[in-house]
Length: 275
Image (cartoon, rainbow, N blue to C red; front, side):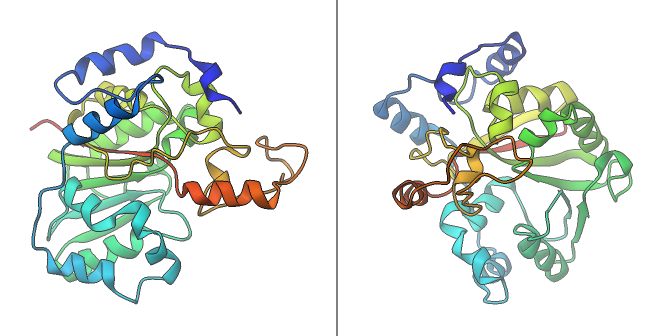
């Protein structure tokens, strides 16, 4: 895969970029190391807070060891602080997956702080809460799948309806470079920040914050099996029925090089439903 060759700027992305002009600029295809450093320095850091319950749950050995091994890449305490998690919230997680990485933090946190955790796998069949009652909706690494099946717009509308005024839409997503066509990048697991921002704004959300907490400059998004080449999935050989294949499995050297990259470069965004 050579995503650099797919630099197709679409009219779809332009409103999102213009609407976010008051925030630090989005990463570009030709961004230099100095520009990247300056952009990250300008990004909003999480506000420190003394949430000992959340700290304890993140550090707890009751979390699966495989989950805790990913903390250096996913920064759960800092990310949830940035999103604004606090006690007594109704938190809806979209498509938590069988492993339930965020669920293994959010569910016990809700139970310990008077909140409520709701897992939703099919948003169009119901959001698990009454309209206008959710405090936070968490979406992790899903937009590439939704784009491929035209679910992004109806899902975002469902999220907007479920959140209360002032509620937060919290997003973590594999990030492509700007200016690339999502039709071309989504099959490899990546979409641009401006694509996600535009989708949220079209549904009525206001962009409230962007963070580089989960950025990974080592990830050039150019991998034989897309984002699934990287940890934790570590796809190393073609699988039957998988369009992201190649003629031969990875060599040991190729596998080691991909493992050295770590997990994907990710955007971390916070939107609000207007009061």
